[in-house]
Length: 313
Image (cartoon, rainbow, N blue to C red):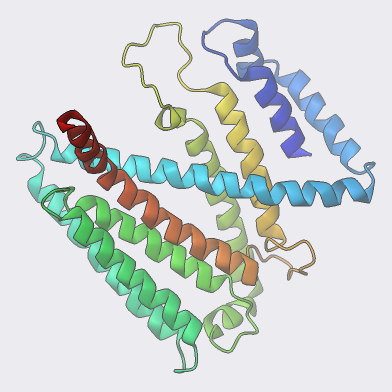
């Protein structure tokens, strides 16, 4: 019932804008009351009928997808902000070498990752699906680089390099999510035999999800359509309601990982995010990331050309 707790927190803190107000104090304090509320919800979770759990499972699919989308926008927003910062007039000349260094490292790691995936996950020519996933990732990396270096876009090489790291990592996670019984996933099958390594991977995955959820939750400003540069001293540092909303969807996402995005799928002990549904969720998330990034760098040119055409008319 963690999701219910965060939904309650979301409803009770959404719209909070000033410090030292009752709702702000509820968010930042009242820990004993919130712990008691959380404990009561945990106990109630064992008393609800199975039909309710089934309905929640369907809702969790949607919430987990929302969490992936929020996290995706947050990551791409940070990458584009970092790229714009280094390409600004203030840092362009002074940080040129640093930008080229990090961009080169990013591309080298991305290409190395693609080569290693070919070695690990394509043991035979019949592994057509893995060949498609890996090759298409390489194509998407080239497409992002070509669009970013187009004279009209001129977004540089740092952003597509960092995005390359993200999509290569997403592709690797997708292939690793394939069932270990598959003949093209020998590495995952071998890793599944080492119980201690599986447990360590499980713990690292949980910590990664918690850190990603927390960092995304406090990054509410990148989702504001209207950005106000002027901020008063008593304004809240981030959106409290958005923070709890991210945690609610993040809890749903974690629940989906534990069942492989399939409520009828039996998971091996100490495994997380394994199954064909998990694989395709990861792959679609990778493709969506590329589409969002390309739209972010191309959109200003599209709006500018449309505005110019309307002014000319």
